[in-house]
Image (cartoon, rainbow, N blue to C red; front, side, top):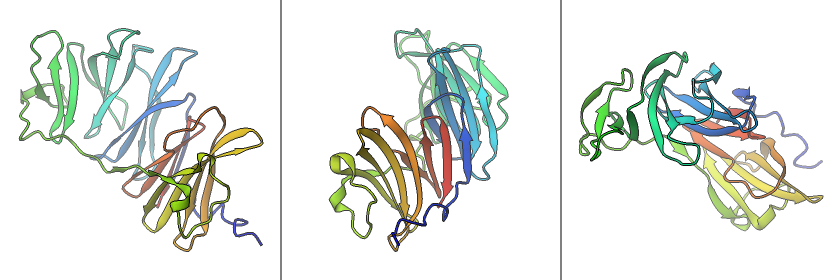
Length: 261
């Protein structure tokens, strides 16, 4: 019997959420253990936002919209709040304004169209008044939008997160596991986590490029597999991230799947 014959159901997803449009961006709030997603329809010129509790799998919302249909996106997330920005124009990357939303309920907390986001610190977001020059950085209360004091780099160190990303390896460096297919371009994305060995790879069979995800146990047996993308035109970036004990990935760009490892 093939060693790959019975491996499909040994691990099951904790969270499976299909979105109506492709996911363009994901951010994780370490403090509330919440995953925030930005989804977009280029045909309808509409952006929307989703929120998932990674602790218990609760779907907080999947289609939150703002008055600005298209020129908007995720800025950051911190302490249970999602910060959303607008764009100054359709032709440039510059942001303007901030909208704060409760990441558990989707309720609007505050908005300020003179403030712009600079970066996130361990004490909250650093912002500045985009109408004033020279730029003066201020620490803001993300719950209220009120500026607290001047930004102090010694106190307001840059925020870190618990996200781990796989490394890109030549396939021949993998030992102790047997890949079901020869990887296209002879490379894989790989991570060893909590006694699991996680591999994403591309295959090129019957003139079709596909992307797969495999999880092996310590004995080298496959305990999970998913086909992530088919009919793609070029090699995709890393297919998954790890946050604490959760493996997070997208299938067909629009379905969120989370496994607890």
